[in-house]
Amino acid sequence: MAREILVLNGANLNLLGTREPEVYGADTLDDIVDELSRIAADSSYDVRAVQSNHEGELVDALHDAARRETAGVVLNPGAYTHTSIALRDAISGTGLAVVETHLSNVHARESFRQTSLISAVCLGVVVGFGRTSYRLALDALISHLDD
Ligand code: DQA
Figure 1 (tube, rainbow, N blue to C red):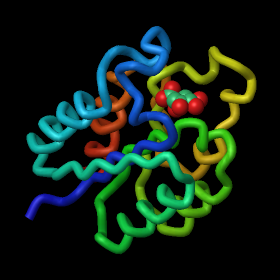
Figure 2 (cartoon, protein in one colour):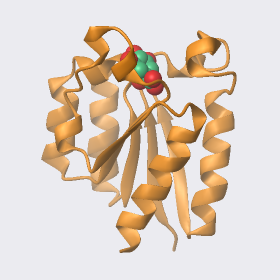
Figure 3 (cartoon, rainbow, N blue to C red):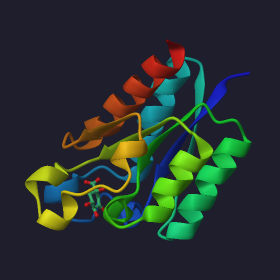
Figure 4 (cartoon, protein in one colour):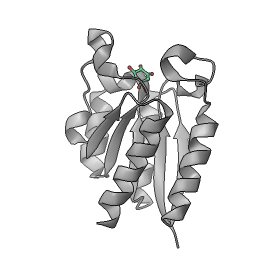
């Protein structure tokens, strides 16, 4: 049976495609998830995608992923990246292999976006490549899992 990778997206990422396209691109979240699903299938992983605008639901999704013995997570928490101790604790508490992912280069933006509360408990971080960030994150996660 193929192992599962969770693609977990947080606040406002359901608006991709119409939300500030000059910052986040013109692709929808469905476009991105479809591409990731195809790539993952080539390496015998199934992608399960979850998006929520609610911090606690993102925490629950990580707990659920751990219970399901999900192989790893591509995570873009949106603005919760910069504020959520609860998400950080969920990552460290579950021990899940998580790659933090951002469409925009958060380091080139407002100062409040330059701090991530989750990076230190993630395997690694991909920022700034638009839709390609997700593909790079998935590639890195699969390499890590298959090593
Ligand atoms: C984002 C960057 C965050 O600062 C922002 O709040 C988002 C999207 C990104 O993918 O570039 O919602 O995570």
